[in-house]
Length: 136
Image (cartoon, rainbow, N blue to C red; front, side):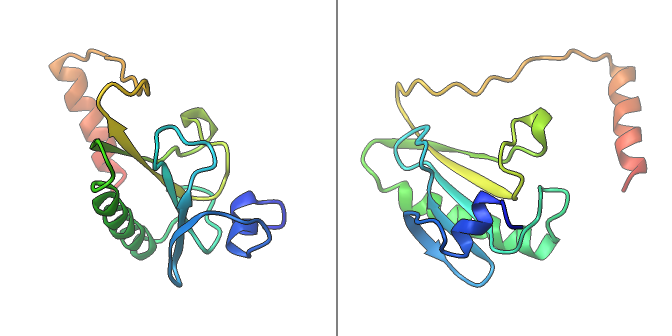
């Protein structure tokens, strides 16, 4: 993809702060550090989002995300992690190239990831689960 920022990073047209690389993926520090150590794992091949990534690539990248989190767990004061993927614009995806965020969490950091409740009745849960299962 000619105009894809992450493809340009993979092709070494744009510098980055690499922390891991293999034939499948590249991991580097996010230029916009949500918290200290915020990293991205991107696929080397261009897939627009989670829905396009082959399962074997996704499994590999999640394994790398775990290795990075384990390494970053040794950074001073790291207390936990958020792993995050935004799939499509409605979910906040701004670069249409599959990537996983690894966000170290620190006690008292001001990063907010907010989940809102959408209460459902038991019947609504059953119907929703059935609709999702149909698509498998």
